[in-house]
Length: 352
Image (cartoon, rainbow, N blue to C red; front, top):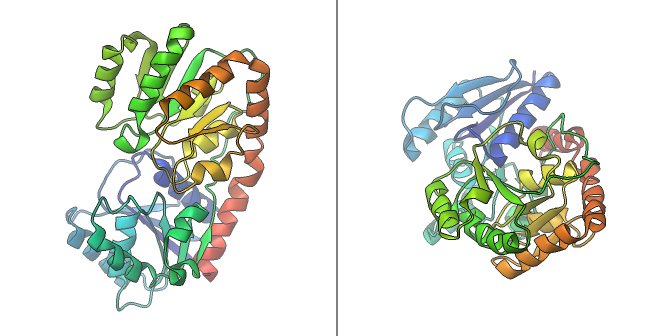
């Protein structure tokens, strides 16, 4: 039996974690033996098929401990293909595989110019390790082109799969709700969104902003809302698995990130027919999904005034908003779960 072993720090919420869970469930349904090695966390936010095995690292969270945990498992399962997500986890897995004969596939899930957190000395080490992978999956052409030709030549670009059971696009009168989804971190630049919403709210006081996500900036963002006198019109919700059901009748979805891989939140908002606004952030994930003014609106990164302008455009013109949402829902054909997961299956078991 073919065996796939996925490796990730945790499964407690997030885009990479959701995609890995979807892939694991799909592959186990294809009668492939699937295990997920979880190197740091213990919580699992996503439903996994009961045939998917999970193995937790209990030896410690340091890089060395994680590498040894992965390497020890590799020695037990030498015929498996190992698939890791996220930059540091990719490097740890490839280091663990040195001197073994296991097959490895890695996936970069964000802007590779940002994921080393300013540690420029790690860049040549990352490139040296990535060149040792049997297969590499990028979400965007921009992320792929960031790397040397040697790495590009062994890589493919695959969009994220949509999860199952998304609600059908809503066709009735929409609630006056602006929605944002994602971790409350600096990367997402929720401060920009809250300031933009504050200006938008002056003209459209019956709208509220609902932000779904957890993160270290929550208190700071709540304080910002209070300082702008709009705290009563902003609702902070935690991460929830059924968010698509909750937002299907919202007026618009906004993503304000400074950089972003390929946002699952944006992808799913488009699939359920929401009019969407996104910053045109590097390395180009939003641009791969949105054709500006046809199925969504792209605005420059960090440009509050353009975010406000786009929000007003959707609020002012229900017919145009419906046009954007209808066209956005066509993304379901490009990102169908079976189509995307079959591409992954090919990479995992035949390599590029």
